[in-house]
Length: 357
Image (cartoon, rainbow, N blue to C red; front, top):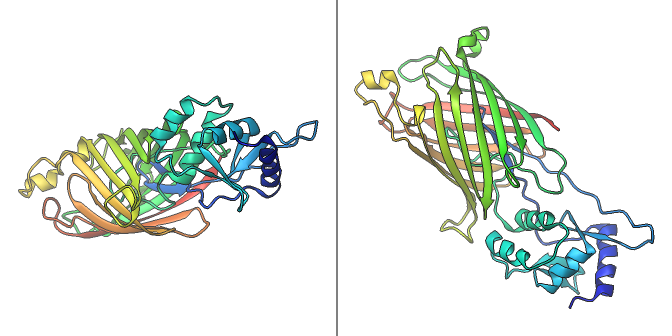
């Protein structure tokens, strides 16, 4: 049994100073369809107030507030461990993944199981960092909110372009506006976006398109999404493109790579399954692969390198975020194979989070 007196003493110190754990919060990225925004958001929580009798009723561990009864029950069950020398709580390393945690929590009487699951996820599960992990394909990750966060929606804008349109020497650029809301951790995360596909002719509403994605986080860094791009557009070289996609965030412990990153795999129609009319006219064939995927590696807390196949061609690039800012960048080279198009071309974008609410 965990000594209640020792637990109360630890709670007092934890609430006054904030319990320290040898881990850090990894805020989940929010990916908005069409605009390809990669935005992270996280907020600090505050310790619970004293009850009227002056007794501490809750303790803050790793940014999450747990009642003393929950901490005691978790300690008795071996999920939490109290380090006497360092005077803090840590998650038992014997709990190897989220699925094991869920099974162990079923046998424990808890007042706030959600806070426990989110504390474990934030500190022990690899999740996407604050940089983009895809270049030209959608991600399986969507809006997600930890139990200690108050923001539930994000509004973002993005501008991007290519050095030239395939089979021409003309550059092209577009502007996107996206809204992400909901919570894929507990239910569904929803991303919605509108894109102006030609900045040289902003008044041309026929080149305005819409997109959406519905996402659900499963477990152990795995998230899935269902959505569509390029909807309701009348004048464009693209087409409506529905898809289903899954993304898995990994680290060097649970994957055969010496890095932390994200693996994405999906299947779709439209641009994922068909080549452009010009490709067909030039003898490149009519059908793309329908399957698409990508692999990214985090090289630092603010930088990632990315490779992805969008069904038509291969792209390589990088993404980075200005430290402690809502501004993120992506740059890369598209059409690196002869499967479609007429040669490589540069691509890039800048995105910014406008508001959290």
